Length: 102
Image (cartoon, one colour):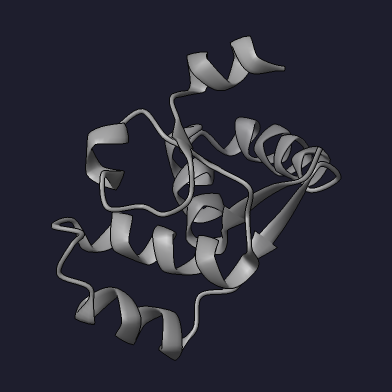
């Protein structure tokens, strides 16, 4: 199974996992292992401009994720906030729905 993740999510994940210097090594190891299962999507100027122009997505970050999902041709989007993706032409599932589907 291939999961696409935005590059910015790695930065957020690293930050959320903690600031402790001793934990930094383990955060890096965990994210390195995660890279074996996912493809990291680039976010470029085209995606940013498309997200800014797409008024169907109220939240810019959601719009940016959607634009990257379209460019990468993903099969579905997994999010806790499915209501934010009502305009999505790509199927959207919550993490629980996705876990129950596999």
